[in-house]
Image (tube, rainbow, N blue to C red):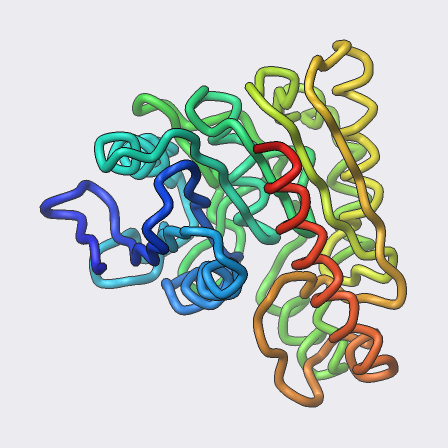
Length: 282
């Protein structure tokens, strides 16, 4: 079922099994569009879990760039599923989508199961349509941009140099940005989530330090005596692409080139864990 912004206030693709006890909202990363989200949703659908792929930018119906994306998109998606008769709703996000998923669950209590793959612990600066620093937050809520960590030094020259060297990753830069004075204010208040949290990280993540950011999330939850189950699973060898999508041969992550079989196995294992985690929580 195709859903559009004009009628439903969000763009998505719903894949149903007939079971209305649970549905999983799926969002992909900074590549934008809806194809990645559809691939993720289809992987869960094939495992017997009803899924809703949601686009949040870079389509004809959504914003052209990942900049001040309204969290209300997920509120509309959750409301649609509740009106359709689903008893519980979860959310799965990958990479920048994991940042979106965690943030959404802090504001929308109906999102009662959260899975964040290659997660972020903070809100980072948004991107222009050319993937450069936008000077604005990635997300907004009730019309107000959320506090964010600036990505100082993310220039066109740096991005081109990464591409030329076939090492398209920014973990070193993100580690510097995470140490900025803005990091506390920009931290995602994950303790406000109303349900269990599963984090899936890659030790060899070259795009950003997902293992370390996952550890920060767990530490924050422990500090606030979070009452719901939490699990942080770290995979190695594995790349940033720790979600159920096909990866082109020669993709510019070293882990993918050196350990293609292990990376595929990690993706499959992470999917199986996410499916079993959902069933366990239900």
